[in-house]
Length: 254
Image 1 (cartoon, helix red, strand yellow):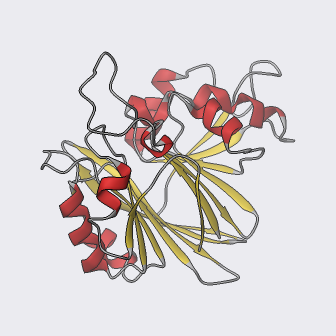
Image 2 (cartoon, one colour):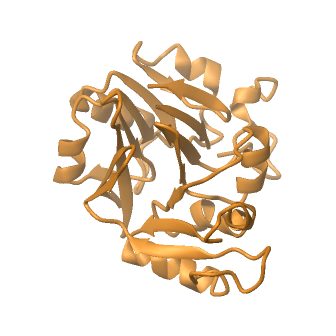
């Protein structure tokens, strides 16, 4: 199983940067990931830089898109799925999310929430509510709720059939539900929200994310959704050996 991650950016109109901007790992696009599971290509979220991320990481196929929640930094690049629709025989990409996430898509992309595109070259999304466990030929994708302020975010755990390896993707969260704890115990790789050093009302801080990772017993952990307060080189030296900061273009073999 392989995954690539992207995530946040230097602040607009802001000169007092904590991050060393000579380190390209500190230049961050919005959070997303591309998971390849026994050849099945699963895209998690599609933020405003989705097209740029696809070009930079040579993403040429998407079988499924999983939307964690409907906030703009996770959904507003979905129009660029049109190219992947053109490449499919059925011309529509299956999209799994919560009822709230699906409603956001319908509101933002009413012309694409359909089983066939209006014309060739337009996007089309098969909108489907995420089940507790989605069973696929290549493995399973389990869903669980994460608390993000007043919102519920879809956490995902991928289990590859051939290897049995597991990857949990828990972005944009402050708390994990009981089920989220249960399905991610001792995962091989955990990707989890770690917004900034200081506490935040709707996101895990770096310290809180480390506590969650250690409590879960994850073999490897990558902190994502980082703000401009997190310098890559500085924090990598402070984190436990099994926990690292994610960065744009990171590729992980699970």
